Image 1 (cartoon, rainbow, N blue to C red):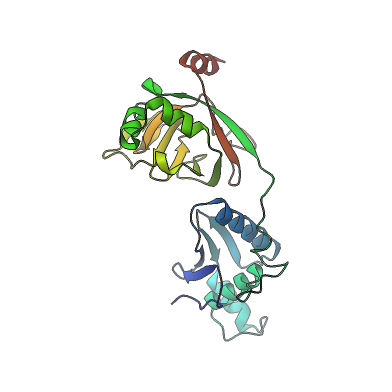
Image 2 (spheres, rainbow, N blue to C red):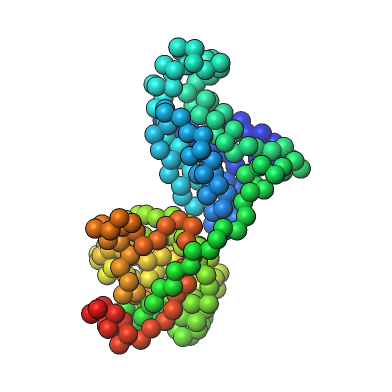
Length: 260
């Protein structure tokens, strides 16, 4: 059963098995939700304790993993005044403390919501060769949206995208902010291998494949940039919270960049 939240909270908590609590916000895939998650992560880090293992952020959630046995033994030894609470309840109480939950109409200066302000933008410009062999589904996206291929490219490149999270393979940036006009369903059948650097659309999401991998997103272009290099101290080109803009380049410019 989910831990009861205070009235007016913008999030809910629920268990994921016996070793994790999920924090889920009510917002959509947007900048405001991302900022709430960023501040949540900062607060969890400031107030962490030894029985916590890790936490993982996604579009609208942060999953907090903990050691239930260690928490139970700590409580049983009397180190916590709420020794009758279960490990799950202890972690939920700690999360509520970290998020400094407010009552309705009482958003104070120290609340999570009041501190969710625009971060210093970390904008990366990504060159992309659209259409042709590098963007075989550009025509399909144009047909679905009712736009000409060049209009799809122009609208796609007119937007600044937010990196919400990195996955499903190392370095893959899940980008929010795709114009509603460009939202196109995934392909009916996934491809067995997509070239590294391919730029794709899937529903309201867009992203860039950092590695050659199977996938079912609509491919509209490809960048010559390297998105993931395990030899670097910072292997992934992108981090959650970065902003991305796309710039169209020609086939010749793409080939020249690859050869460098």
